[in-house]
Image (cartoon, rainbow, N blue to C red):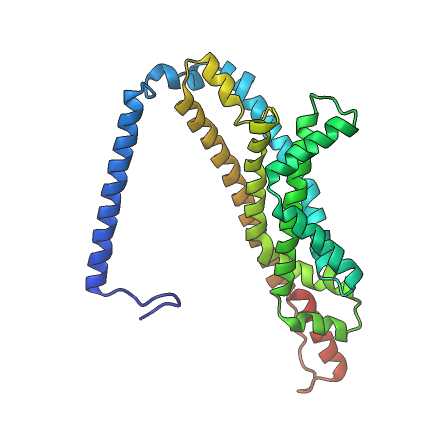
Length: 302
């Protein structure tokens, strides 16, 4: 018996797989032992370096929670702006009009090619020179601007690829029913492409959350990761403990995003199945009107 990807392993292959697993776990255990030994030699496993995160609430109320709030604020603003902007740019790249498609493509390729950190720094310089935004809020504006410009361009490519991955017959059926290009995109293609695009979109949302740390490193934005400097300065140079706790917070945030996206994807798939309608034949024959209705139903429900 075989699957789509590989043949079912036989007895010898199973023994080799077990051996490889044991060797891998042994190597992983040795690496973990070496890391822990090195940390112990540097006194990074001492209880006084880890206990503040459990015994002193000021670590959370003064540093971690305010930093987390700034991270979520910047990420939320960037997501709310980048998603619709990216969708519009992606639709623009699919336009039949060259005067729309070419400039939109140039914008997408330009901002997608520039590192997001450079976009943040350019935005900070522009806000400083040409606006009256307070220096207290300027890092937030710069971080959100850089994240929006870069991620909207990436999302535009995700949208374009998702729509182009659909069978060509979907658009042809909608066109045969007399639907305009905008109606076809809005009511037929995009609803089906969302399910295809969702994993890539979730990955990009995770990237947005993590990239807020760039603003803390270069622009003085008080996000979560930047709080490690204040914590290590006030709690005995507990760098490893601080980075570990911050990493766990990032993992929790991204796990929540992935879980919510998984639930949304399941609901979308269930909605598509429940919306499917079959038009029965009358008297053993299907007339032209019934065929047109069935074609429209197939185009809309996917």
